[in-house]
Length: 203
Image (cartoon, rainbow, N blue to C red; front, side, top):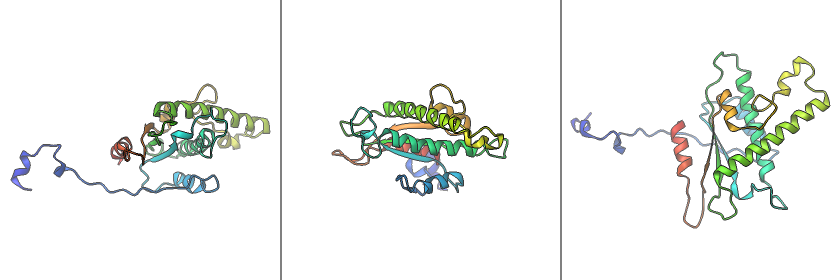
């Protein structure tokens, strides 16, 4: 090590260690989502999950929701979070699996019709509340879950089946969730600094 290094600031870029990572893009189409879910069930060196939503199509106030709207996004997110929850509850280790952070990346915030990141988060929580209530009722109406052997099938997102779902509920299952806005394109270029910061914090 050069003797001059002792005079370098700890924030000197030359002191930084470059970390390499692989970013895998999985299909969001309903018929192909099992590829993503399979990766979550049996992860290999998986450090976290980035769930990208189109913030410009998440309002249920519009008459005709385009594909990828609030309900569809929430249903997909529900399946991913429930899979992570079951991964934790079915673990044979007393400590459970390692933390699996989730970033909800609200994209296209440069558009006028886009919801702010905070509203994206609260809208998804509200929709997830409706979905878990509906699915729980569906299981009870069909009689599924009456047998203790079917306990896994009646597992509810966030644990308790009553009340509103909040992302903070997933922390109990080692799944911290953060919502951050940005845009990968736009008149003034990309704005993904918050996403990069999240990635850097979890490498």
